Image (cartoon, rainbow, N blue to C red; front, side, top):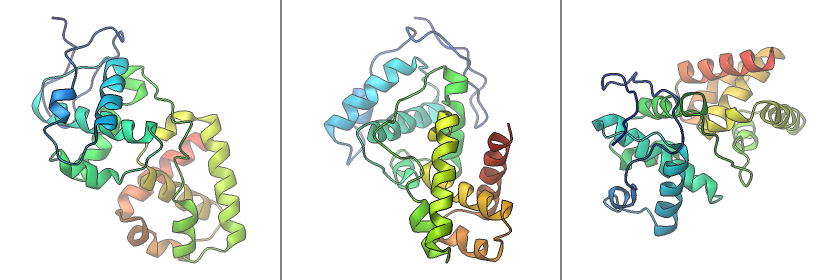
Length: 208
């Protein structure tokens, strides 16, 4: 059976792009072992797994693959689970969520899921209100986010909370609205480092 070209098993493993026809058996039986995942989500996750065409049997990396397929399945079905809570179901730590997004990103696998039903930065209004931004500024941030996501759809692959917080941080930093950002890590349930890294990524995309 053909196997993908994987690096040694560790958190920085990279999966090289491969034809979508290269697949293993389905992941349905794997996902049925985890509590709380409905049949419709399992079936959708399996379809995404087959379309992605990046199989792996390697310990932690396989857990990350199962997580990312399940997370994407929820989003494909118009649902928006908390990625960190879902990661715990698969025995993954909070920091491994970003690793999973990176390992199985469209850049690495060549597969771009379509999330037309879901607005990936939907947390922006809630986060903005909680850190004290005005309704007018919030609308400006939402408009900016919508334009950015239209230009760069791959950003939809980022965890929604991270994406929303990063967009808010970048917009506020760019417009001199700095003091309100002190409470953003608490509101977004994320570290300042993670938010700053996402803001830097947003800046890179916006300045292309």
